[in-house]
Length: 108
Image 1 (cartoon, rainbow, N blue to C red):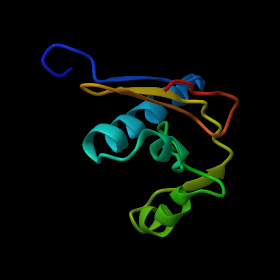
Image 2 (image 1 turned 180 degrees about the horizontal axis):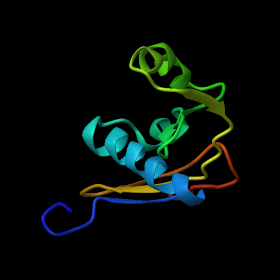
Image 3 (image 1 turned 30 degrees about the horizontal axis):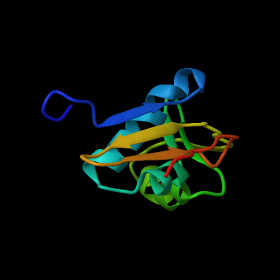
Image 4 (image 1 turned 45 degrees about the vertical axis):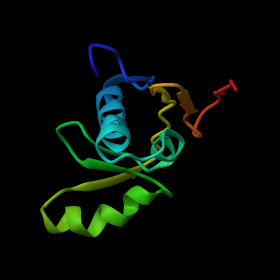
């Protein structure tokens, strides 16, 4: 919230992976200032109390060596999230749909 008003609407299908999918993109968008479309297109890194899952054929693979050096067991997987985001600014709303699934964003 900013001044009592929401600044980001975000959600995803994905069962137990919903929490890390949403969390990593809240961080990318609100903390790191990454554009919503670019944030949703970045590779997923997920840990659900087992092997750390890195999204195949994605930017997440760049973290593999560093995670293994810290003792993480790595599993490379197809992590097709399906996130949708609306970032609410003062005069504009910016929407983005996950490129891994069907989804559109429309507006002016």
